[in-house]
Image (spheres, rainbow, N blue to C red):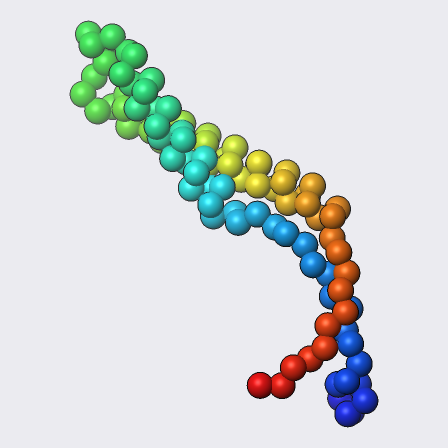
Length: 93
């Protein structure tokens, strides 16, 4: 790069994007919470010790995880349409 190219402003795009990990963990936590609540509504004589609870946690936790990722991707696609452009200058440290 020459001296004049360094002084030229660059055009960059600015957009907000959701944090995927936050949506993933929130969806999984909601799924696990629903599994515990559902386990409490199963009659005492119909439930086994830990098999049903474990299966509910795995099934609903993974379902919540998938729904969280799906919601995150949907929000990411929606916010990608609202990008803004800005001119920036390079700064030497």
